[in-house]
Length: 119
Length: 114
Image 1: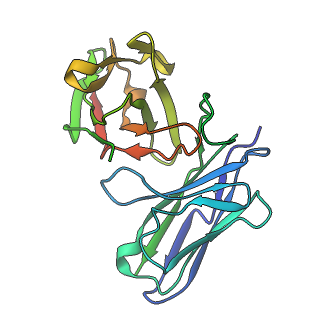
Image 2: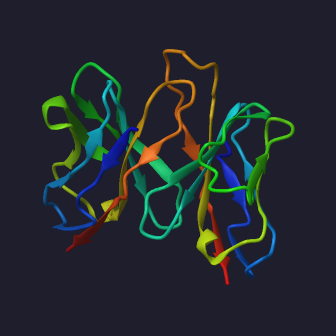
């Protein structure tokens, strides 16, 4: 079956511009995660959706970053007034999700990422 | 807050040689630990995970890892590496089920020489 897809694969923009990054999760996966991977670093958590709602947005670095998932499937990460420091690979992952406090683990499946370059 | 540390930025091994990649965790309760591999142009792939029970866990592609609470370590091993194992390897952890946001180490880049 189809895995997690992310578009575009590469995005080059100018400082100060607005960008949107899209994630299509695996069909039926209710949980969706965004991570950011800067050069030479491991991925860092940004935000987690369970269904349509953001269950944890503690990783968003500031209010220029925002993400939505209006129908509980596709998610869009939005970055306003981009800065050169926003240059990174943005990764999306999805899993079966479920209620907090459960005793089983649902594996996250990662997309190939969107490489964002801010000039 | 939980964290994982990978002390080796880059490791080079000969094809056919054994491999050990180090990972140390810092977490008060029982950690849930993972190893991921990231090949160029591909997404992160889960190699193996440890939650509880047998401290030696087997994964895909011939990898294994051993959880050692006394050393706060979860090192990844492979008896004989192949050129296709060249990639970036990440140790990661989560703190609970339900919100399984991963905390990653900084990664170890593995180079294989003929």
